[in-house]
Image 1 (cartoon, one colour):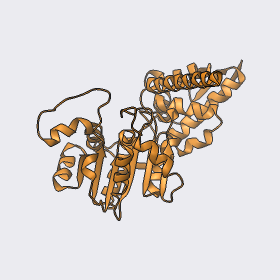
Image 2 (cartoon, helix red, strand yellow):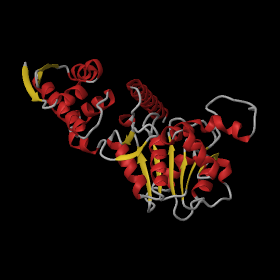
Image 3 (cartoon, rainbow, N blue to C red):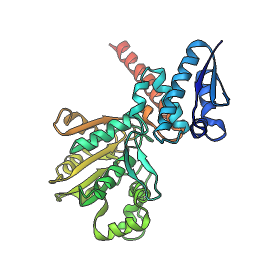
Image 4 (cartoon, rainbow, N blue to C red):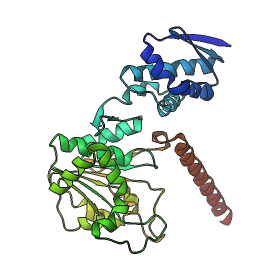
Length: 330
């Protein structure tokens, strides 16, 4: 049994580190198999030698995040533990480094993982960025945050959000109302992100002025989009023809972000995903960045991360089984 102490100078740091009802400390104890006790201004960590060492490095990483003004959440704790376990704690400084945008309620939007930081840097430095990854990695939300930041800084004159109108495995039939009412269900995730950033009233004002446009992908044909920040969401459901059509809409002074999840394709089995095709064709093209986010970048509930990992493991098992059968059939 080994015990080490960490000095915490300010009460605010201790409160932030421990979290509500000591939730953060309980995660460290469960994940690393240690005991953590707060005695006056010292944190006592006891357990097996290697586990204590990992816990100390985890706490130090979390304290460095706290010192930069980051509110420590359960997601932060699990992510820092993951970085420490893989010997990558020097990357902690990259997390929550820069504020991308501030929401209508005053909440700062920052990268919460190293993968998200790379994604944001790619958007900043490239004309076209393709962000691919599982649900919960912040692909769409961060892209909208970058679009709002560019619009507020007057780098672009308008924000255009689009996605293909493909139903996720179910037929919705004929929807009532005008065109806007018919396409709204498909575009709801984009509305939600914009409402969060701008607030409903500001969003409506910009929509009426034409500074914001939310439309199905089919409505992009034949247009040239200048001085715009254009986001194509759910790109895995585009055909190769739609993707080529969309990419060639790019005008002067514009930026494109394409987001999608190659594991959630809702196209018919005989159709090739435009996203997969684009990733293959555009690899190595100058001023185009391809960003791959993973389950490690999931910032939703921890169960979402576990679900993604379970599906990935199942996919690997099935592929291994298929390869084995192919080998036996020769």
